[in-house]
Image 1 (cartoon, rainbow, N blue to C red):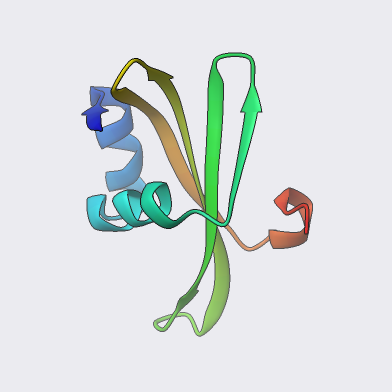
Image 2: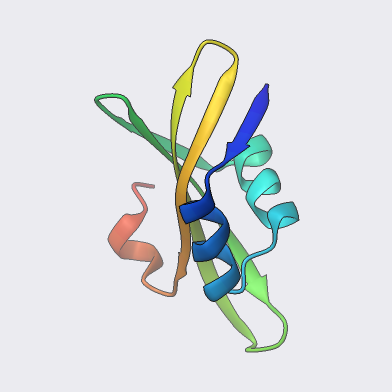
Length: 85
């Protein structure tokens, strides 16, 4: 599966201090994927050892053929708001 990192996406993860490695990990081993029309959201929890806090990383993307066009990604501490466990 090819990943397309748009300029907007690159800027967003840089500003939000999310590594490309983390994004790829979320896409490969997501705990949940939500689909709304053509948009998909992959998410996964992780423990930030610097802040000593658990976060949820959400990666928003479009999938066409064998390509994932990455739109944005962010982390949030509001895990329950976005989780459907």
